[in-house]
Image (cartoon, rainbow, N blue to C red; front, side, top):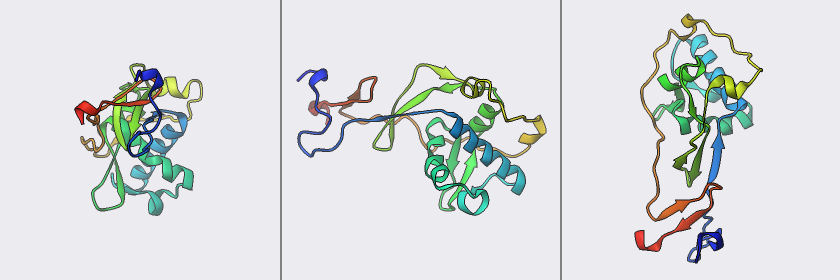
Length: 168
């Protein structure tokens, strides 16, 4: 069966075979900025989303997507989140990131080749003005989410998965 005719579900178990692209957007930058402000307010790089930041339900549900590019990390067993060095560098405009990541079953399958920095995502809408001393807190150099390609699966540019049963 050709890739073009590949079914969107597994013929054996009917599981969905389509990954989803998650892109860096203004909402995610707003969340990263809220974490940054919380770190400065509480003077610690370990922030509880519900107790410290008072996020909306939508913000709370989407916060974990910041992990896909290593901007934040989950603090083990605490319910708290940490700003990574990469996240602080992205907010300061020092680095760029892949525009998106392809996620399948909570595992990153590929990174977009196009890269973006904070200014290109915000365009002319730049509400975040930082001074260097705004970042006088300890960041962490950990990634708790990284490329983790599944064996026996390949994906096209639209995220449609194809099973190669010989590799399973």
